[in-house]
Length: 111
Image (cartoon, rainbow, N blue to C red; front, side, top):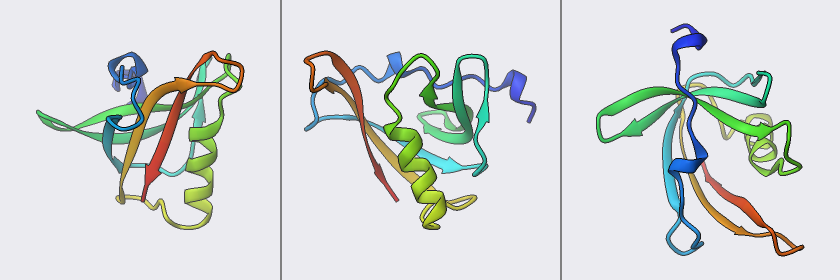
């Protein structure tokens, strides 16, 4: 599928602010290699939705943000072979608080 027709996952659709009840993204890995767009570093995945599996572009790190935690999880998982093509992973995410008291998106990746 051409990347120009695949929608981006929108983090605004994951509004949880509670670590105990995070939003959960259930994804199937399509590609291990990340790619850059004008705004972010990304990877192509299949997202489990109520309508079945749907292609999405998963933004791993915005170029405008210092928060590289999801990109680090991804690269470490690939390096350690926990993330492989066609593997299934879950990303738990919520909006937490940074050390400076600002809102920051937090992630836990389950391989």
